[in-house]
Amino acid sequence: MNRTEQNNCWWYLSSTHFAASAMAFSCWCCRKSQNVSFAGEDPKVHPDQQMDSDVDQLRRFSLEELKLATDYFSNENILGSGGFGKVYKGRLQDDSLVAVKRLEHKPTPDGELQFQTTTEIINMAVHPHVLRLSGFCMTTSEKLLVYPYMANGSVASHLRERPPSQPPLGWPTRKRVALGTARGLSYLHDHCNPKVIHRDVKAANILLDEEFEAVVGDFGLAKLMDYNDTHVITDVCGTAGHIAPEYLYNGICSEKTDVYGYGIMLLELITGQRAVDLAWIAAEDDLLLLDWVKVLLRENSVEELADPDLQGNYIEAEMKHLIKIALLCTRGSPSYRPKMSEVIRMVEGHSLSERWDEWQEMESCDPKLEVTLQTFYFTVDSTQLQRPIELSGPR
Image (cartoon, rainbow, N blue to C red; front, side, top):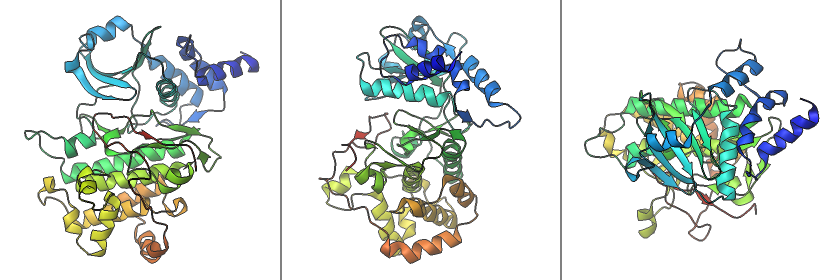
């Protein structure tokens, strides 16, 4: 294939026109001729060989197969729903369980962008803590993505929508979630080219497999960024309370945007609370979880932060350790936030003291994120794959 054909193929995959979108998947094989690389777990595997393997592993399902698997998209099989469509639990003929994301029938720029972005990322990112695509189905009227079924749902569902019969997430599991999520995000930032900025890191988008290992999912808002770029300017989107200040106010998006979201996710893990809670708003109390944590930290009342579901079954020193990491990740200035590769070392118990001393010295001078109800329209964070807010462009 000559260069012109390759460029045409790449343009087609990136286009928002899906009149003949099934052809886009046949174009993936051309990607190995582009300047795109990714790091698998085996350094001896050449990227081209890895790419061929990944394409071969993707299965094209027939619409009838997925109808049968989901009992014709029965409401009883709905795992979640949002602005892009519904997700259904399915059982294939070989008895394996899958999650089927059915995009809205009516084509929308957002839905098609999610479809494009998801397939691009899936073709690039291969990591045990990043959700993989099992296959897809495209017809003139349907676009469906098929994922492995995550037996234990999302982290948020365990924190906030747990039935009484289900035990809460234990402290050791929460620590593993913190580490697994950090590893998944670090891989997306440092080992994918172009690098992947998730843009909506939160407990609802961290899934749990059969062993309760964290898997970063839902790439519908993800942004691909050239590996040499430090940031890009984009329209602002995400979930209230999880959006970094530089992104919220100026549209500046980088891997440090995800670091901020990760920090808020850590606070969700520790407290069991949402980043924004309508009860706080009704009481005219602190609007953001981050503000509440900082107040209690100043008052040396850290024990009040622990999720009541833990019933005191946690190690206080470890909880304080994760709180410190969360506050480092949510610094007002992105340049002061650690990279996710540094976060991994901190979660593992290294390299925290110096950064924490710096945080304490500079906190009084660090830009604050002042948020009022007039700043933006927001949606409540939900475990039901609710559509994140989409704000106006950079300002």
